[in-house]
Length: 369
Image 1 (tube, rainbow, N blue to C red):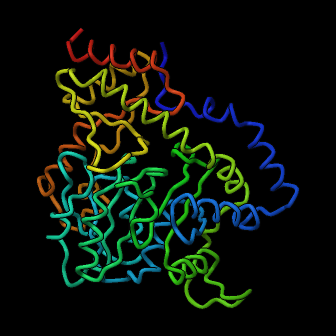
Image 2 (image 1 turned 90 degrees about the vertical axis):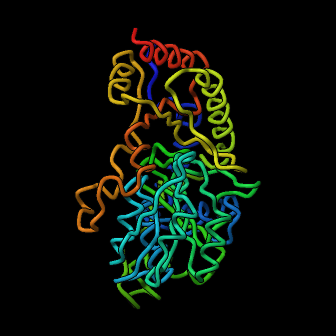
Image 3 (image 1 turned 30 degrees about the vertical axis):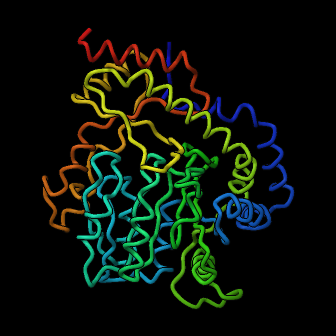
């Protein structure tokens, strides 16, 4: 049995006609950049995320960049964040001329640890930037308290957490500004690149909206240095078709995560992902931790089972950030995650039989068969 890591063809098959019609409408309207399709999606996604404003962008990286700029982060500033995530989180800080300041992760969840983040705050800190890793919300209540204590904006990287909740509240309603990615493999994915920010702050939303379109305040009137970060009409139309299906897809992912829990909980040598207390993750990924990760991944691949590495090298040890002066051992929990994490197949169409095959193959590999 072949088990792909992700099956986007199957994912789109059931709604193909809806997608075709939506794209056809954009072609008929010839509204390819911003326009009515983007505006409709922005309104729908703001409501879904429990937020007053949504600004559609061309990627999740752009969302992070503009969120930081709109919050006033600039050259010489520091932003406290996690070393265990996709590197766009830190890129956005660097794009502002600021310095990413890392703190270690919670050994149970892999998310940024609030207490360690608090210890990293200095007089130069201008924002706190936790990540909802794998679709599991960070401890946002603790981070909100930390941000309020220091009068700092809380900027949430929710690129993997569409539809996740914490204590019953949707991701998107819990931070000063929340950033999403709509990369095709995300729980809510476009057919190309896409991103958005959501916020209750009208001024922040307006500045992001202006910055994404060359910082125009009226046609040909550019009030600051701006960017070409506009969302495309086709991507917005596809996302608007998919959004009503998102809760159902997330529920299928949660059922798959529960099934993995039952299948793997007694398997020696496997550590399962732990949700944040009070969270209902969206389960964008299902990362186990296992020794000899490379060997296990290669054996699963040979058995026709797709896996992923999220993420094998912590950001503080990436060559691009050597100038920050961090060294191996600085963030031991993040480094332990990076050395042992292995993402198993996870997508809404994943079947029980496929998961049972994954578990059987994993058991045989760990037993040395």
